Image (cartoon, rainbow over all chains, first blue to last red; front, side, top):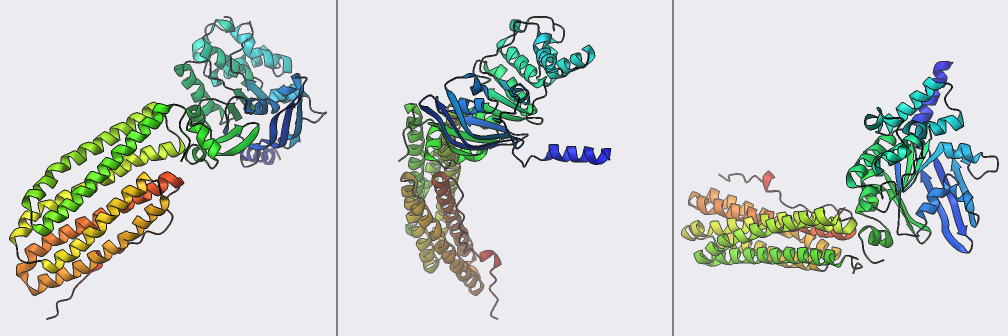
Length: 268
Length: 238
């Protein structure tokens, strides 16, 4: 019986053909501003989906819909249906704290807590009660730092303040903090825009590795970064999703004229 | 016409690359028609000029490659820009090969001017080269105007060159069997004809690249191939 269950579980994990997140007819208004218009987009597991488009096109707004970060904005109204594994995330029965644990987020500017490196990563597992004892918490902190590619640089100073790290290290600390609570989806809002090319390359290498375990959605203004790290790309323009599909197709032969103008750096 | 790039120097760089391709294509077209002229008039001086000018063709290819590589490094081109820059490298490679064939034709002018009469065969070769010259001009036109229709028109004409090559191949084999003294001239003429036929193939490749630059997908039509000389066998009548 156990074997059957295990097989089922493995098959469920291996099923990458079903969307992890499905957005259907999503509309967002900020008061009278219609920020997102009828967005339909599927996010698949074990893939990086890049959201691209000019400033103000709605890509960050859409990203924030996926873990209900827009709930914190009074004038923001979200309509339409967004499901995580088939479950409507805007359903009143959904616990938003639990949702945000399943759909983690990394922001543009690294924002470690003014606490030690250890406590930054241990914070989530502690409040969600993931670890049963100190040993389990240590294991989570260490493995999260390893998965985030930061362990080798900080293992001998886990008590040092998170804010004492370099920008790139701080961002990886934030990624470690996100993955410590075992999310299923990671949202990244321009995670490299404040980093130098070396720190950016390290984060990109990390994203490549993380996608084997999570679905990743990344907002980026760097066309080259979107082309390098994503498997799917979605192009937003004036609140509409104009085109989405395989990244190689979008960057070599986009269908929509506006997509072509944007990615080739032309006046649209 | 596509919109201009926000960074205007990118447009300037692309235009310079296009101009270089056009200049090279025009030089190669001139080389081919000069080689034909040298062949038909047995003009050794003109043949020598064609051989000498091939160095310019090689230099232009290197220059286009260098420009394209620099643009890829500096501009990180995407979509149609990327296709155009990559295709520029491939087009310059094809043009360089066509230039080599013109040089090879010229190399044979000397020996062909010393051997016997080959009027009938050279008439067919002249017909082949005339078609190639028009294809050369039209493929430049298709490139400048980024016209898939014009590119397809050039692409389909290669069949006529192949058919002429096949008939010439049979004719020369027959001549050689009838008169062994004709073997030297016929062998050289076979190489000349093969070079012309191959030039047609490369122009066809350029036409395909023009189509790809504009449409973003390869030309799906089945390429008309008429060269069946590799399977031709002419039996001895006696």
